[in-house]
Length: 438
Image (cartoon, rainbow, N blue to C red; front, side, top):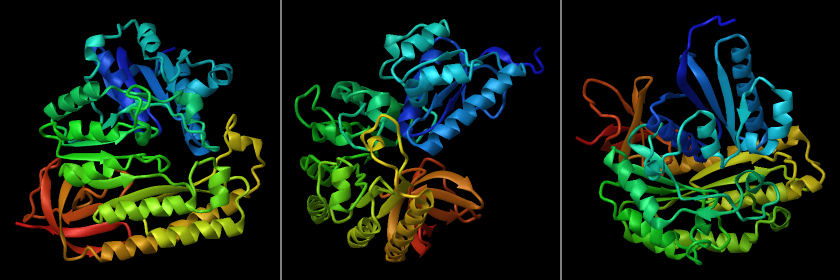
């Protein structure tokens, strides 16, 4: 029995996981709107008759969050609060058979490349004329631009190829068209994402073609900032550094997940690079682009990681002094190469190592931020919160990096989505405080 009124033709899309998933949800959103559906994204009101959950299946915590969300809406359906529940995304792609047996209340399950089938289930048409168009769910001044799908890398710990398939690049002309459409709607910052940016073009252009793509995107009028995320170190196309240096609207920012600093661990992880080559790459990047902020991620507790190898990682981070760093405790994923090894690092030890490494990074970040006091930066403002306008420099990506806080008082007027010059007056380990330069 229905216990609460809902709109049967209203669709609520719930997105879990990374920015690549968000782009997929935005494509679903765009297609359904094109079919005249009433669509919301992560609505606070539970008034939609149809819920589409776009899941993440990357690591244990993400999988659990996805399962908990599915169960929440399955229960809502049984209580009459929702009519239909559909699940898509990575978790659904990877565990469809097991999940459908465990959670029969879900009406249908879809993989990562099954948008046409999802639309058909909803009695909607796949509109080819909307390819290149996208309604975004982020603040209008920034948007993610997914330049490729899937991954061909053999990393031991990663299940992404199982869920996303092999690497497939999007053509440059299509990406430029998407960029122009986004900028025409007010987007000022384009954040390039992929499983591996540096592999871009190998499949369709028979060469690493990220540099040409960047040059073409930098020509798009109104694209004030272009940011690079997820660049693999092995086989990094060095000509990209020249493009960053020569094009003023490409941010001095590079997200390059390195995962470890021990040669033995890099070998076990099947990363295809040594610590020495990694250090040489970092030195080259910083020599050519001294103002560039280098972000990375590390994994601790991978099978076989000894205390000595963890200490090598700590020493590597102390040497590199990354501008931004994130740490993940290893997650033992089925069907990956690392799953053939014993998960022999105690979960508590994994957490301790992650905390210890972040403590090292906190000191590095605090020193770097302290050195910025007294300098002036161009800041893009994202939101107002807790008495502050909050924005970012070109060295910071939304949601994961440092922020710049300017007091919201009668003397300061800042329109969200605009740039402003800010003089840094004080700092904390991961944030900067400043005042507007009048």
